[in-house]
Image 1 (cartoon, rainbow, N blue to C red):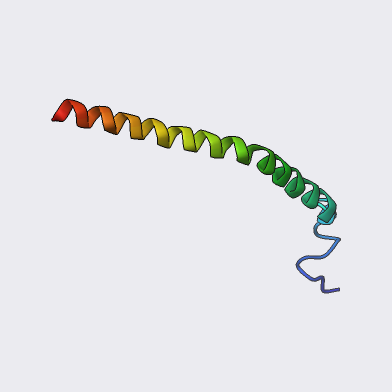
Image 2 (image 1 turned 90 degrees about the horizontal axis):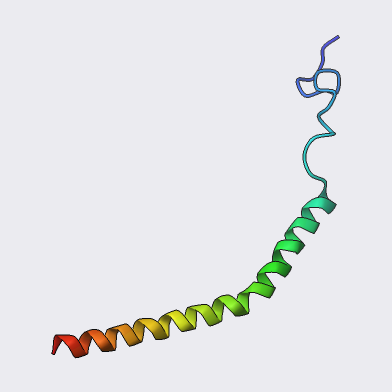
Length: 65
């Protein structure tokens, strides 16, 4: 009897491996919630860094002239 290369008799645990759709959706949803919570803090940090770089540039211009 000819068996298909990907049959249950050759790979008995094939359906038991991997993630289910529900697990994948929960993981993606969790990452999205964490990103939404952290985005405002990251934006404030980036604005503070840009302001600090502006201050460094002003001091550098003062010392060079």
